[in-house]
Length: 497
Image 1 (tube, rainbow, N blue to C red):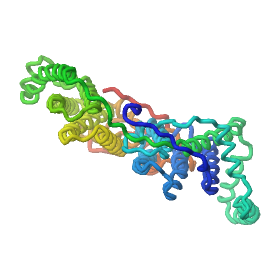
Image 2: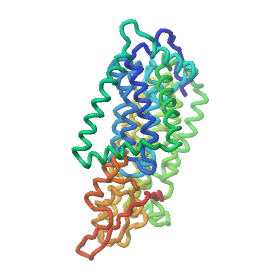
Image 3: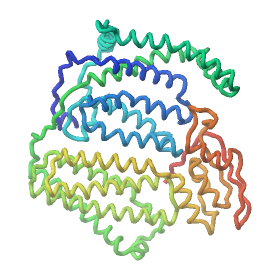
């Protein structure tokens, strides 16, 4: 896509290679700390404080460049607040999205932001399309970087001053540390545990630290050197009106025929379902995913058409009609989903698919408006990008497992035997406050991270464990006594519709 929407002008980097000594030291320090965190502190079986600190430390060079006004891509700073919210969501919630997928999304987003931070772009969406415009030669970059770093400075080298500062500081730190260790037993134990952690590192950790160090430093160096101007290209050839007319005319005819049945359902309601000869649940579930795919494909067709849209009235009318029909289909599809939810309750998948369809419908509505006022393809694509970032951030910031449990418990409070106990048992510990309101015996699974370990500490999980305990919770309702067993096992997920 990027080749169709922009030109590439590489930037001459001569004379611009890490002249700032403090920035070079920052890159080395951050790369070393990240290597140590990745080797020693980032939890392997669960997301915890170690992951959060890793993400935040990785963003330090970007913060340095932003504060020193060296970031060329102005949209980079627009993305960082979203990433920050995602990091907070990982530390607060325990659902599958935040624990299984969001950490990888955060790492990818940070990497993409670095790779495009030195690009001069015209639009927001270009920031999320990384372009590797400089051939990466590790030996060449490392040699230039370290040669510049250790070059002698005729005006009293900063590195000599750093060395002397460390030389003076270390003995005093050792002295005070010894006094503090003798003054407090718990502090002594904590320091000894840290010393034991580094005293006899495993062979794989000894090897991984330098490998990770050069990997992280290499990414930072490449990102800083990966400079270019990427002006948008608006010289796309217009589509053939005859071909587009046949294409959109045929689709509009098919959509109109199908829409006649959807309108009959929207206004016929109960009578239409009865005439279908199937149960309410079968009718509600029938075709929902297919219509979600239809809406997604229409969004793709719309973006493709807008790439070469030159304000032609015929395309505007046909495309507008096409999108309006799709919006109506989306409303009918959502009505089916709401009927199914009323009958069967909520699951994670039902929530996510419903929200995604709301997002697609919103894109179509906004797209119609932007097309009518003849905004450029680049503005439309950037608007969709911004809407996507906002929508995903809102979804990731919702306590979805609690919402599911709360909805289902309230729905079946008069007949708890209808609860889908298997699905509820596979929710994360976030669902526990809602599950305590049902008399049905359920188990709540959560990951093995220990709240007694600093790097494995997870705020949301440990707060709930502290409140409810980590063995069993007995509670009494008006019906009878029941048990919610909190099992310290690896989270499972049941994504059945």
